Image 1: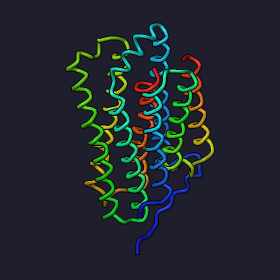
Image 2 (image 1 turned 180 degrees about the vertical axis):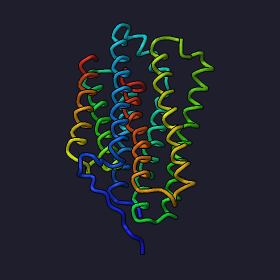
Image 3 (image 1 turned 135 degrees about the vertical axis):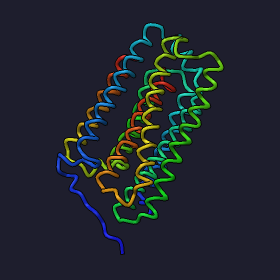
Image 4 (image 1 turned 120 degrees about the horizontal axis):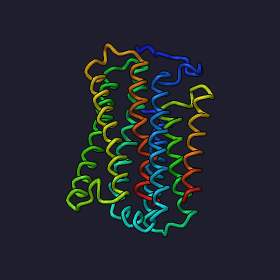
Length: 190
Length: 81
């Protein structure tokens, strides 16, 4: 029989994942949202240019990548659920699926970047693409860091505490949250 | 075992993602459409934070902080556009 681990998350100092990761999450969200607001503000100077540039992006790639990240987030939640029950076999299995979702995201992003570079839509093409490359690029770096963290957990699962797994999961979900801000603003509304 | 609520949440999230993409590709950029797309994205944001990140179990402070952040973000972008 498996035992279940519990932490009192109702305590203000113990949100799921711990207070430190939540301070990081809030700061990251503020940083990305400030950059997105700057992008939207600058689009008012030349709306036609920003609209035409936005239409050069493949929103299908963006939507599929959103599905990859959301599905990966679902597997991460399932991973934490199994770890709480100390079912390490299933934890390990769902952790692999979580990382697979992240890797699929990166593969599709690489294909998208390849098309953009081939079409000459690089960082200095115009202001929209400067924002596009910087925002999505920084997000990709976060996904890469997240995969490294999850990979570390995968290889040292037996030695991990619930708080550490929850903190790693919170970081992974943060990548979802950031993407959920980037996707509509960059790919859909300008 | 996968939790039923998580499965339903994922289904809604995928549905909302597809809906916003279709809506964006098949409409002119009217202001109310933009606000609608941002609102649907906001619902996705809340679902991930409260269900997958288990923020629903957290102290009221953290829940309020995320909701206030989201309202300010969507509100500011809608005002600028």
